[in-house]
Amino acid sequence: MFSFMLMMSTLLSISAISWLTAWIGLEINLICLMPLMKNTKNKYSSEATIKYFIVQAISSMILLFGILIFMNMTTFSSNSTPWSYTLINLALLMKMGAAPLHFWFPEVISGLNWNMSLIIMTWQKIAPMVLMSFSSQPPMLMNMFIIASATIGSIMSLNQTCLRKILAYSSINHISWMLAAMLNSLLVWLLYFTVYVIINISIISMLKSYNIYFMNQLSTMFTFNSNLKIIFSLNMLSLGGLPPFLGFYPKWITINSLSLSGFNYTATLMILLSLITLFLYLRLMYPLITLNSSEHYKLFWPQTSLVMISSTFSILGMPWMMLLTNLL
Image (cartoon, rainbow, N blue to C red; front, side):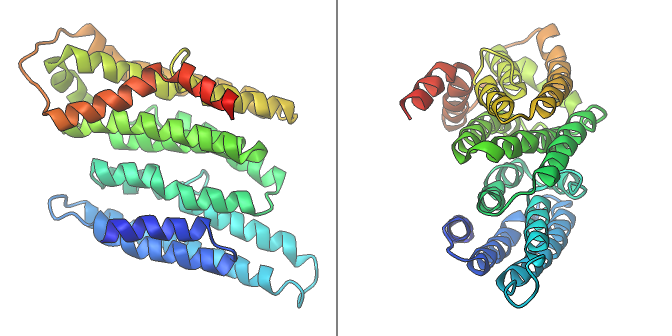
């Protein structure tokens, strides 16, 4: 029931014809997510749930304040309109965890299980980002958040050993790419977000199947199966945007759109910072490549099928994605 309402509330927000209806959808979304986050088997889930609720409540108040200013801008002076859009954008950026408003994001993700981490890193970004595309985006503000998210997401992940925090900072880095894609076209953002979801499903499915949460567990758990070891490594390269994997294509499209729009310095900086995240993924792969493996541990078929389907598209899906975008 809560999962169904979670999906419906997101659809309500992105299809709303007024800002107030969108705000109501976001509040319903928050209420439905709280019971799903609470896990009796995880002692840290209560703390993560409370942190998430407090941050979302604060951002909702800021969003409502900006909406009220926007709705009453005829009463106030016309100078209030830029302030209302700024408050709305700041609230939405806080909701999705963009830097420098990311302070809650890694801590919340590290206290949840893999299923809830996947939902917050993927599904919970849909409504804020779509609503941002409907609002007027100040270029200077957006550039600041794009550069901050790319910088913090890449640098702060280097000293982490918890895989959930690593993927959380990776998500912050990818937020910068999604915001950059959204500056030019909602279709480019949709392409990037779809690819990001596919790669994350593949990686998190493998980590969940082996119950892996920390870097030192990679060397001990993935030695049981050489095939999954290779698939996991290739998925990490795809997440880093290395050609010819699927993760490279949306970054290529985003860089092209940024260059055509005159954001050459932003595109160059984002490329350089992506090299840092790629170095991190290579560091995760190193113990997997150097250690021998045995085949006595197998996954159940439902887990194997999910991993194989998502991984196949993540690793080999770039030609098909190029064909699809050319047809569109």
